[in-house]
Image 1 (cartoon, rainbow, N blue to C red):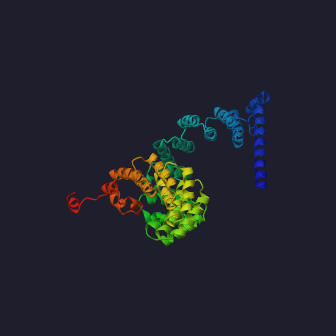
Image 2: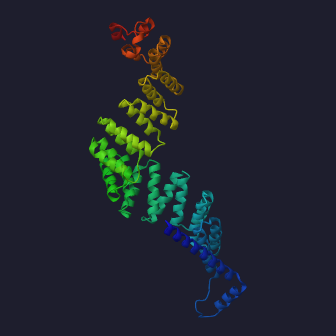
Image 3: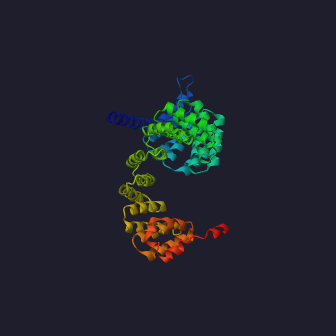
Length: 431
């Protein structure tokens, strides 16, 4: 790190010295004596390298000043010198390109766009047109962005950045066939680039070309064995094909790769749950929670999985952490309340069901839950009231309530028998 700092400092000093030398050159060019010497030298025939074009020389010196300023991140001063260079030599395309880049570095897209459009009117330039396409992409002018990029690759089909941006804008607009074309071209230009094969795989999968997508994801992983996204994508295809052992292998490699993806943890845990390996799933979610402490879905899924293994106190802790991240998911309060009931913490469960109702007032499950809590707490009137409202919304809850042990204390209560009374067999047949 210290060596790198020294190198960077040395480079900065070189650019500062370069700027000073170019400034001295400008001072010399501006002096009357230099102008006269140039004139005399121009009048002498066969003189060694006479200065025949002072404007061109001034343009080059201003460009040198601008380039040094740009490297030193003095973008406003760089623009001044680049524009001076263009005043002396309109055809100095490097000055035009770097002026646009300086405006972009200042995040002044409007001025950069204005400048590029003027420059393109004088002469087409693929680098300037690429910057124009990039501005259009940033401003969500996707069709115009595509237009510029297509013009670029027509003139230069090896322009890597143009093909890459074309792939991005095609993905953004859902033009997966266009994205496929762009990434196939990129793969031919740079066959050792793992990211290109990964993006080609994404486009192919969106088009329903699953096996070809899988092949490209594998190519990306072969080039870059720690390409977590490629390995995750392979796993998701293999899981959908029922090849869960191979999917687990890919997900394990993905989580050992360059990124510990939240979606990789989720998929691995889901596969373990589907194979009844619940404690393995809990372990995966716990590891994911440590890696992604700000992920609501990880903490929520951890809580649900802990409930599946009847670790209710730990589940409550997971749900509490999840609530701090997202407090408006009705499913959170329903499952949290269920865990609280299992711990016989009925007042807490009632609070959670009511919180869920605040978010989703017409949810029959929350009303049914409150009826359960009231019955278990010995409040028959409240239980009947909540259950009545729940059954009005969902008559199927009659049978559920009638067969539930939670309502055992109400089975002799006339009001409970009335609201849970099922139609006679003849009535059901006629209904």
